[in-house]
Amino acid sequence: MKVFLLGDSTCAAKVPSARPETGWGECFQKYLKDGWITDNRAINGLSTKDMIARGLFQAVVDDASAGDIALIQFGHNDSKIADPTRYSAPWREYIANLVYMAEKLKAEGVSAVFLTSIARRRFKEGLIVDTHGDYPVAMKAAANQAGCPCVDLTTLTMIGLQEAGEEGSKRYFMNFGPGLYPNYPDGNVDDTHLRPEGAEWIASLAYRELKRLEILTDVLI
Image (cartoon, rainbow, N blue to C red; front, side):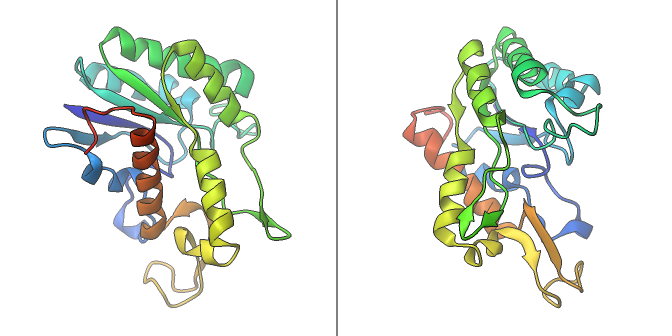
């Protein structure tokens, strides 16, 4: 049995040249019971719109079996209004795309679970700033319309980043000085994508919230 992961670069598996960048989906297998495996279909830059348009979502439907699970996390790239190939307005195409995915999977006997986008590490005067606008709320509305669960990772990660603090939260992201990693000799400033510590943190947050909400009780350890 499979747990499919549908999402963007915050979840996707990374190539060696990008390390230490790590997607949280790479860290999720440890939370599954024996007999379940993750099938990570998340891709850098992906939105709901181009996952459907490029046939990537249909490939998941074709490969899935009744009883499988799909964790669906989008929003980062749907919001990129300057890119018409990816942009999905939150209260229009974004909701429609999510509901379409959930219903198409349900027709194949696959259960969908939505997860709102993880927060970016952005602070103003010491306080974490929301950068996702209407997308998390729109995803909750889509979940209600589709009749599937929704895990609010946006709020959970904003709380966690605030607790870690402006400086301490850097350890989760690809934000570091020179000389630490061979692939980034001059350092890096990226407050969206995750280092291994961040990927582990997000995977554990998703696991704990799914357990708390009693979602996927037959799947998670």
